[in-house]
Length: 197
Image 1 (tube, rainbow, N blue to C red):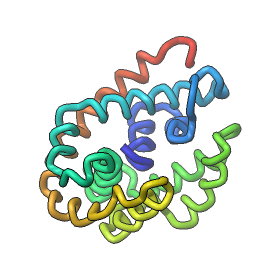
Image 2: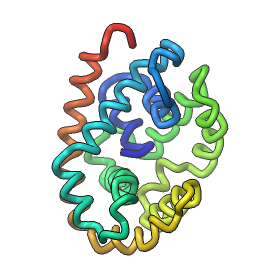
Image 3: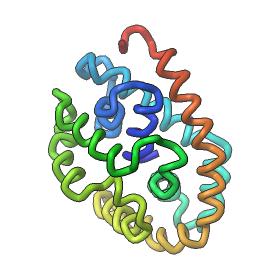
Image 4: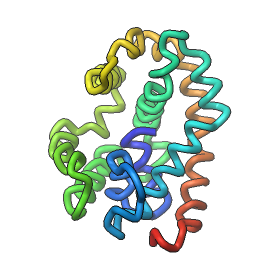
């Protein structure tokens, strides 16, 4: 799951939006982070762990060309965000734009976020990343952007062609898996270890 899904799942589980998105930028022991971020970081990690190990995700990874095996889990995370944005009205009562503003405000007003997120937050809002996920052209742009931030961008060669070819398979996997993840996120919010509350 990428930014939009983590923010939506935070809202769905009534936990901090900013803390959940901070999980993407928080490395190491959770207890090293400010108390108000710990539950969100923990929840973020539960979501990532389940997504990476889930049978539906594993099966989807195997459908990607062999050359994309290493990049496929990241591509799937981004493609799932695209699916969530595309069918947003089925998953939330606010419009995607209204939710995006709510999320940007939550990030902007949260103190002690990881430095990298603090630097990125104005760009996320200015370029309206969460709404941009709706457009497949922007999905391509996001994949290219992610590829440029790693040491071996070539592992993403052909990523968008694979996404287009597997569009139906990605949608089926997303629509089957995401409602499960919404339920799990609500359960996990109630099962957060006491030391992270």
